[in-house]
Length: 152
Image: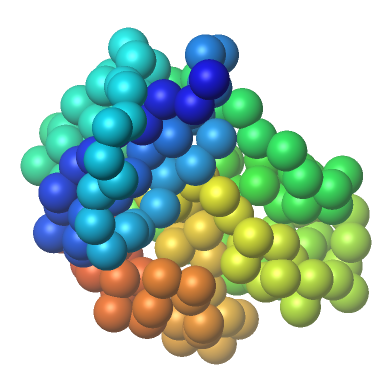
């Protein structure tokens, strides 16, 4: 069974999807699906997203059920350690996971990140300090970084 909740945020309509044990997707969608059922995990995630966008929450405490390659999992786990309001570069992440030359592969793994905001790929930037591509659009990435920088 898949459970779904929605949250209308300042960056768009966010769909939160979960299995019984944890969130597997947080993404921006154009519209709500009909006939969906939420559960306590998706509802708690929506509450935490609201607290995040309101400037109250800086860390999420929600169970995740994510799957990826070993490399993707290493990257996703590492980005979870980048603090609210801070950034790290693709190279920083590559070095931290012991793959110094894998900067582009880190970017590819981030593009496959299924959990927007909670797994903060928006905090990962280019070595020059500039923001690079983002699957949800550069405007959303900049907005998320802006929100966090204002509230640090």
